[in-house]
Length: 279
Ligand SMILES: Nc1ncnc2c1ncn2[C@@H]1O[C@H](COP(=O)(O)OP(=O)(O)OP(=O)(O)O)[C@@H](O)[C@H]1O
Ligand SMILES: [Mg+2]
Image (cartoon, rainbow, N blue to C red; front, side, top):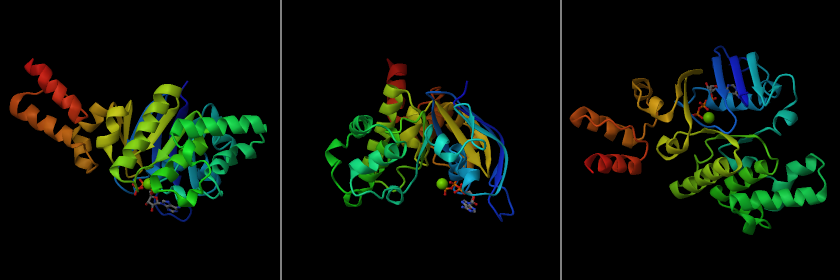
């Protein structure tokens, strides 16, 4: 069974004249790494809010259709129950961090679950080490860089052991090196602990090579849904003005000029295809 199943989802914010999401159908299988993108304002953040029940619970508005996560309907179960299964990471981690130390921050959600002390301690240690920030545990989140704060936000969610991580442009405010280090953490978590990942990103060049599937929104609808190759090499993706990786443009131009047939997503893959064809 799919871990996330969205059927006929349409949503309008209160007092909004136009719907933000229109008849969205989407399934995400357990352990999938799904990359989501689309032009600004097309409804990606709104969709993320639907995945853990924040919409409609905290936002109100008009909600039609169903969102089911790990078998639970988000409109029939409270947000605290859904959010133990779906952890949400936003663009600005400083808005989410409020404890006096990193260790307390990561323990916070677990204390609310009233878990035994020893269990809390071991989950906090494990989450800090998975994200590679054990050395920061006594620091105040305020003193950390944006990239470090984002790692704390991810560790705090991992400690809850969710089945799905939904990350809404987690690297938008970070320099390319910090963004890459967050992406590498996600890739490792996905491979090693099998967590399902839904990543909203504009930087497709960096993330597409790791995704199992790519979903593109336009004006509240899912307009493309397939393998990263199918989606990013399509004419439709080209016309949407999303950040098509440069390697895709290069491969298309090689295809037009000399019949190159590969569909690489990274420059390394392109180089290997060209060298392979020569050899
Ligand atoms: N809390 C809100 N109340 C009313 N309207 C909202 C709210 N949040 C978003 N919207 C509207 O919903 C539409 C989609 O916004 P959303 O933030 O989901 O887009 P997005 O795809 O995440 O864009 P971006 O790439 O810029 O982050 C926009 O028209 C926006 O103005
Ligand atoms: Mg957004």
